[in-house]
Length: 122
Image 1 (cartoon, rainbow, N blue to C red):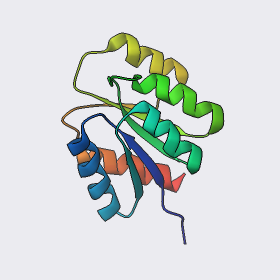
Image 2 (image 1 turned 60 degrees about the vertical axis):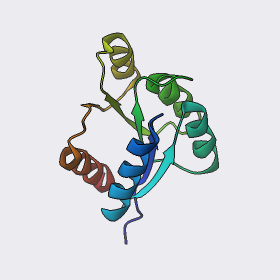
Image 3 (image 1 turned 90 degrees about the vertical axis):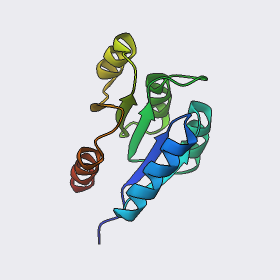
């Protein structure tokens, strides 16, 4: 049996994170929510994370900064960014650092699930 994909969802909008966790759990993934970059780091220090899905703009640190810090302890983590804003400079930095996908909000949930399924198969 294949292990469930471990997904860390980080967004300062609690409704967004909880909705995504609920959907991904129903789809058979192990999803964990964090409301900030710092909280995301705490979660990731306690467990292995396969995929980081993070908002780009958050108050304490942006999603790319979070990804860069997580790569130090979990170098195989895959990162997906989500944003409702034009943040080209941050997104470009993320791509340079190895971010795999950038999703715009509102999210295309079916596409997101397809990406997670592909991650699980690899």
